[in-house]
Length: 352
Image 1: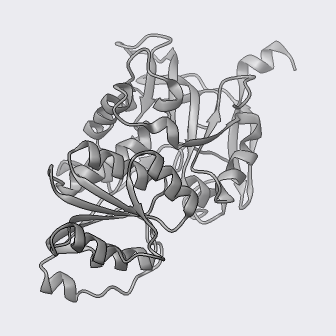
Image 2 (image 1 turned 30 degrees about the vertical axis):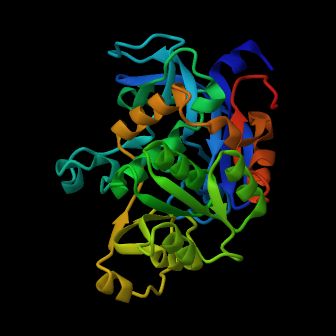
């Protein structure tokens, strides 16, 4: 391959059709006014990426699409007019580009903009050697932060937002239903906030990981979560339940675990309509709180927690594969045996 080709193209993971995500050489775009080019170091794969790869989001994703949004990288080039950043700065990216003009943005909630451009879904993403993003999406990561830990800043931001949204207070009892990466991070952030936490997860491997993190974990197939929460709270139940499983049984279990005036924080994506017993909401005056994405302050708090070593995020990483083998990375996560899969986006690097 010629030097010219290497300078004008770069490797990126693109979704072509259901079951077809592969590394391609694509044109490398220079940053325009107000934009910054980031060289991703590690990019995580999440459940949304799996939905894209399975073809479930074809109505939204234009193909071929460079995907991925959970990343840490270094600044590699600045567009005209950009100040305050230098080549080599370690950064994460808030992958949200709101329009700033809709009623939701005007009311102060740009993270759920009516016309949100989610980078890595609606526009090119971070599974690439180079990624051009708006300057306003950058968040500085302190020097010395382990990059593989910083690759989990985006899901940690989700957890921070969810715990904040739930109004969880120190000393309260919280039940987390679903022990995937986000569920584990919610449990860790909730514990860090001073709550007593129990995690419910049917998968033995995930329960074992949760236990190594010092979390109390139960198998919902063997132990009733509602009975446990009442036993641990003098008959009251959980002040907050986080539903992260995205399943009907998980939703029922989360509702059943709540105390009077308990708060149900709905985190998992329920793609299909659910039949929900609303009587407990009336009888016990429960609250339902939706939690979607995160705000910039959540990302900044996630940076503080991860960079400060206050959350054991490294334990969640089960696989690291190079960008050239991104198809294997998706397969590892889809098979169900992985917890958090990272893609090493550095040129000519291998996984570990």
